[in-house]
Every structure is written in structure tokens, then in C-alpha cells.
Image 1: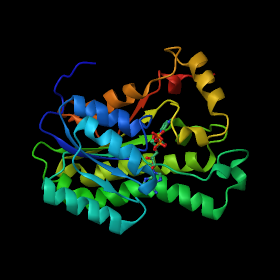
Image 2: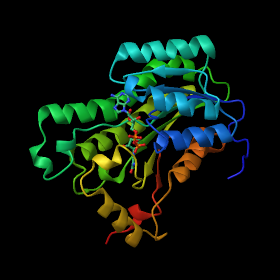
Image 3: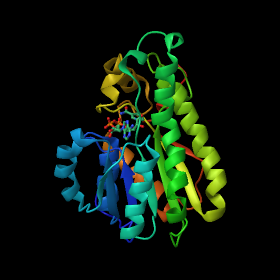
Length: 261
Ligand SMILES: NC(=O)c1ccc[n+]([C@@H]2O[C@H](COP(=O)([O-])OP(=O)(O)OC[C@H]3O[C@@H](n4cnc5c(N)ncnc54)[C@H](O)[C@@H]3O)[C@@H](O)[C@H]2O)c1
């Protein structure tokens, strides 16, 4: 794709780049191509080498560690953004986690710990970070945009998705409640429901390669999606072209969610 300058003059932060396969990275590349200035966060020191390699590719100067379940980390991140930019035009939440043993077999065996962990990391962090970022998002001149990443397993049962499906259902509803809370300040909140893409997080899901094949066979477009397609859809939702869109779950899944067989 060549640039359309869709995000020229915008400044945004992206949570969730682990490596070059991350959906967050595809979004960062699309946003950069469209002219945005980008800040990145990374979960922990283990990812520092990857992020140090990737950040210069998109000219990201603000690169900060952030354990998203730690409020003090979130506060520190948005204080740094405030010092650097004094406002925020967009925020991307591309974070999820569940223990591997929760992602196979019956949902029924979910433990309280496993349930709470998946819910906290994959759903609650969106609410926490949006609340802390709110004053900065409210300062964006032409309104601002928050985008989260979700999955169909939060709407329909997917074998093995288990606690993560329950967490995605909570994330989807959080998007709608947040959209309602923040709309008066012209802060839009949406999610992209991506089809399966082979990333680090996806590899933790039992039967992931069968899922890829099933979607390829059944989806209207008769193929899987590419991370870049999520990046381009995100660029739209982050842009002024989507100024009338909030509380929406946009499926970027080759149409798979429309099929009932
Ligand atoms: N890959 C897919 O098939 C697919 C499909 C639909 C939705 N998604 C969603 O896309 C998002 C990004 O996942 P991905 O597939 O790019 O995988 P990924 O492994 O590249 O990204 C997941 C990110 O979450 C971060 N993370 C996990 N726990 C964290 C914590 N406590 N604090 C801070 N960061 C934390 C990881 O460091 C990593 O950067 C997730 O929300 C995932 O559920 C993925």
C-alpha cells in the first residue's frame, strides 16, 4: 500500500509489540506509513532487544516499558506522553494473555486464577489505560480514537479459546461502555475482530493450525487474512475518516464471522 497521509499530524501510542509478527507491529507500520508519530510500549526486558530493533524502523522515539496490569506503569507511560506531546490522538490496545493450560480441552475446568488473569490482562487493562489516558485523549483537536483487538471467540464458541473467549466478550462490552462514557469528549472507542494470524500469542492456542485451515476453507474470501490487513483497517479507525464510528467491532476476518456452517 502507498501512503494516503491518513494520519498526518497525529500522535499515538501502541501497546503490544512483541516482535515483527505482532498485530500491534502491523498497526504501527500502517500508522507510520500514513504519517503518524508513534510511541511504543513493551511488556518487559525480555522484549527489549526486539523493540530496540523495530522502533527505529518507524522512527519511534518514545519507547517505554509497561506491564499493563500495573497502574503505576500506566501512569508513568502517560506522564511521559504528556511531557513529550501534551496530547494523544490515538491509543491502540493489542494485549492479551491466558495460561497455556487454560487454552485446551473443556472451558469448564477454568481455574479462578486462570480466569482472573486472562480477564485482567486481556479485558480490564483497556479500561484502566483509557481512564488514565483520558485527559490526553480529550486534548486532541479533532477528536481521538482508541482501538482494541478482539476475536470472534468472544461472540461464539471456538474450541480451545475458553477463558480467552470470555475475556474477549468482556473486552467487546468494555469497548461499548467506554464509547458511551467518552463520546461526549469526542473520544471514539472501537475494536477490530481479527481472523486468525500466526503470532506469538496465537501459537498458545491448542489447534491453531486447524483453525487457520478451517477459516481458509469456509470464509467468503477463501483465504486467511494478513496482519497488514489489520494494520490498514486500524489506520482507518484511527483516522478522521472514521469520525462517525464508535462502539463498533469491525471484523477483519475474510468474512468468516458471517458464515454459519
Ligand atoms: N493472532 C491472532 O490470531 C489474533 C486474532 C484476533 C485477535 N488477536 C488479538 O490481537 C492482540 C495482539 O496479539 P497478537 O496475536 O499480535 O500476539 P503477540 O503475542 O504478538 O501480542 C500480544 C502482546 O500482549 C502483550 N502482553 C501480554 N500480557 C501483557 C501484560 N500483562 N502487560 C503488557 N503487555 C502484555 C505481549 O507482550 C505482546 O506484545 C491480542 O489482543 C490478541 O488477542 C489476535
